[in-house]
Image (cartoon, rainbow, N blue to C red; front, side, top):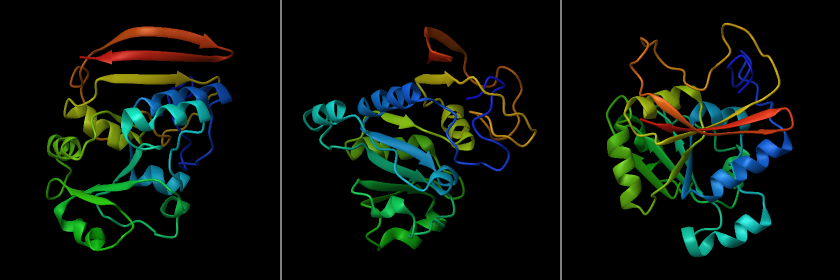
Length: 211
């Protein structure tokens, strides 16, 4: 995020604000996970899967996680995703998490390896995570956006937060933050405790434990 607490500008531009060191940091986080979960708005903004790029990290994955790349999970309430995105042409396992009213749009198509239905109008993340676990996914990297993070965090299902503070100011009332969603009173979300804080160049890498 930026120094003033935003993850993108008001137009949700996919422009990355992190450095190469930040991307390498992301690679290490992805390598520790069975799957990466992103919201449909984030996928529409970037258009591609969040894959591990480091050859050494890739080489170590299969024996620990069973797949070369983490499973790419998209969360979408509407199920309205363009199948022309590069995401659907990439050689990665893809799953969809959606609600019962939208599952039919993808149920009998081969774009996703699995469609997880959890909830009627809003995703029941306890149910969704149980289904992911039953499918062999134990550790999930929650990659945003802010609405998705707020939903999963609000249901008590986030254990750790990794945050890179980048030397840039974004500003703007409409610029998204790491945890968006409906307004909450102070203290409604769980407390966090700082585990580590490391500086690399002009960036600050923070690791928090939740709860």
